Length: 192
Ligand code: NKO
Image (tube, rainbow, N blue to C red):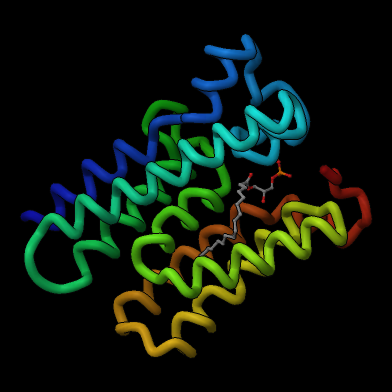
């Protein structure tokens, strides 16, 4: 029962469309009508500038952290933390408030990782930065980081629950980037 409550509350927290809210509130812009039409930090940066990108990144990251912390408030196994994190990411990507549309789960996943696996967070973030800096394709950085996350989680010897979380989150993030991947292959992907 407790696990279900964690899942439900984390899903609701994850569903809060930070990018859409911040964009509308401070820039009077609906991100869904500009750039890649995504509500994530990248499109906020691309459409509204650096400040908006960083603000949306932080807000989306906090949603992931909140989900995990909610799970960690339960005594017992790491499974509750994983459920909290995973449902925050699911909420972000299939938002209750956006008719089950939403973002791509990158910043929210990173938020979860900051609490569950500090060293993996540091490494994937560094790799993401290098790829984005060198290629200017944010999606390429995000997909590569997603592929590496479960591998690194296993390499560092994290509990099975965390590795399973990394595999599921990674799959979700990659699936959410299907159109980006197609554009990367065709050479028509947006740069930042
Ligand atoms: O607009 O389709 P777009 O070009 O915006 O956006 C593609 C982009 C969407 O993602 C975002 C969020 C950007 C946050 C940047 C933080 C860096 C994250 C480091 C890696 C995270 C690893 C994910 C782990 C999954 C298990 O991609």
